[in-house]
Length: 310
Image 1 (cartoon, rainbow, N blue to C red):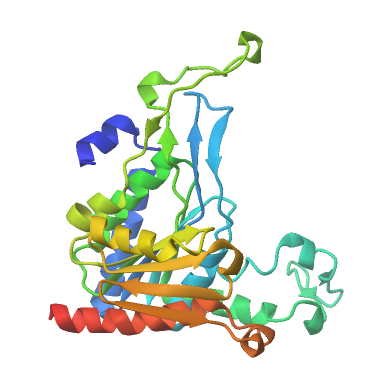
Image 2 (image 1 turned 135 degrees about the horizontal axis):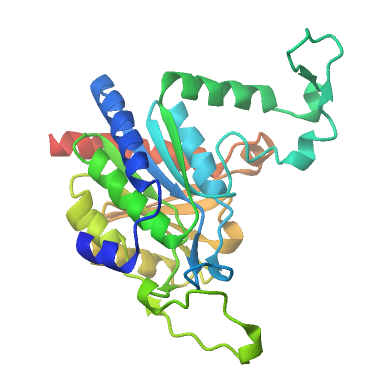
């Protein structure tokens, strides 16, 4: 999809230009440091059915893998641009939803006036302090930038802006975990106001969303190391589907996973290799996540990719 088509089919959301400037500064700062950068897209997209939307077609993903992967990339020394769906999992926070800490955090009576101090037993929130420190260290170092989107149009414009701002810098990874909407209603065909149920059964004709890996690989970021994910429920077709994606889009890596085992097993697939990554029972008991192994493997491949390019 060309840039002119993107604008015509998906009107630019408010704030897109401002976020492009923020991304440009982020990229320039990390580029000056010679730091490797990864763009992680995470969550799902939402498609409005009206111009003043009340109803949506939602394509939901929890974003857990994206959040955990962002943490692993930060730990590996990468700068991370985290493009994520509103209310999906957020790095360092997703293991601690409000219901886990509302009942265990207590305001401290010892806090000086004007200062809020909270206390909790360490065993009640295991790992919370370490996660908080890791997030604050990344924020202070300027190595983590999170940008939130809601709709498909938001995501497409932000993805294109990110590609334009990051592409001039080498050592770049695109780590595309987003669960993408397959259908949308063009802005020109949307009713302006809420669709009324009094009109009887609803029939909507939707257009297919172009596969965005194609312009990302060919036009927006042709020199980047690009990783996509393939999720299936049928183990008998997953490898063929992943290899087909590599052949069609000509990017570097597909991470293939099966729905029932995605938290403990994946296959890293390239043009000429297949590498299975597994978590042992002992690793699961220790709290090790499969994303740590994925990022460790991809970091080595990224290094080799950079050396080959140079």
